[in-house]
Image: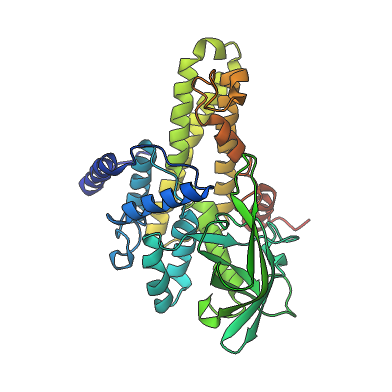
Length: 388
């Protein structure tokens, strides 16, 4: 597969590169798993929005740039090449927004999307529950209709960005007598409503990247439901498809990591070559990142022609999560014992963010649906194998 860009696409790439060079923060931002860092990242998202770059594929009237998916991939390549800050509102911009475009009412689009593009509202996910992790059909958190409101009771857990976020999107059981994927509705709600308690969950690095959320007679307007009542499963599967298949993890993220891994290997080649398997892993990482990029361009081209992302999204999710693990494990092997040092340690050298990336990569096979569940989906829906 050979990629060839039009003159317009090349001009767009040049524009993005120049803009990023002029507007990048002068210093690295703090982690968005701290309050200060969260607000620093919100401010950066607002800077992006001034040029329509916070949501490049959205219509201009909603705060976007009106780009197609190929231009989005080009933007991502330049964004990661510049080592720009991570996106604190990725749950909203990359997951909820495409779902809103497809299932939301016109009023909901006008209400939520421009504020999302400006980072006025940062969104968290409300999928998992105790006893309903990757198996979202086992959700029990109830939203009982009472006039023009739903009254929500129950618990969510492992909600990404929920500690400091403004809004939550998720699935709730609106038919108490229903089972599995029937009787679920997709509801949007502010996290500051009376009756909501958000408890931080600390990650391996000690920072609260996740939260558990408790609902005690929380009243939410029925107007905040997306799609028909009881049809939330279909809406959620669309969101999950974006999470696993295309938008959440652009290939540029892994291409940039692979490039840094090659550079790390070259700096330590004399020691690293004592174990030939390290060089093999570096080559495999670089080839894997390029292969994922080409596959994503193929998917984007198919979507542009009117196609859909189906169960193959599960293949992508397994691929990028295991590729991320391979690259960071290889980096730590190259660094040896120093890999366990924090970047601020006196003898850290070029450890940089490899240890932090390694710790985060451990979560890759778990979030967005565990890889074990994704393999079941591939076996049943793509290969036609019977359920065990």
